[in-house]
Amino acid sequence: MLAAAANRNRAGVMPLDAYEQDGVYTLRFDLPGVDPEKIDVTVEDKVLTVKAERLFEDTVGANWMLRERPTGTHSRQVRLGDSLDASKVDATYNEGVLTVTLPVREEAMPHKIEVTSHKAEALEASAS
Image 1 (cartoon, rainbow, N blue to C red):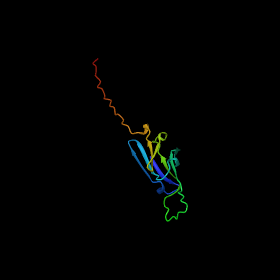
Image 2: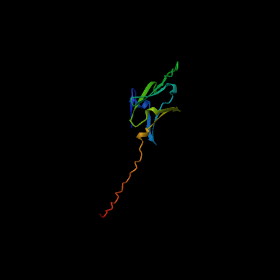
Image 3: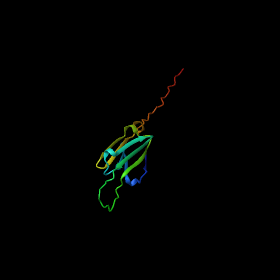
Image 4: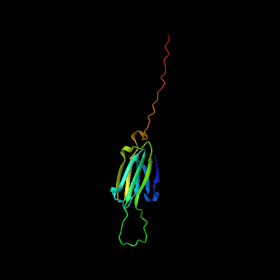
């Protein structure tokens, strides 16, 4: 139902967890230190794209010894299956984690099919 890929960066820059529960797919992206205004979530042609920009922290006069936290614009793409309802995507950002939920379309949900039985009726012979 989902196929994730890194786009223009290492997957480690925007780690992703994904799971399905009760007909809803949940994607969780780690985006610590990103301003929510700098996060863009779009769906186009069955592809969910998350772009996030972490600004460069300019510290005038600092003598940097180590700088591992990535800055700039990073993105991840997830290909959505036909059974997901892309019109009902929801995204929330809390404590450095972007959570995107995608429900399975109602018609794609598993449902029970009732089995009916037609008993053969015995024919009565009539004497003529």
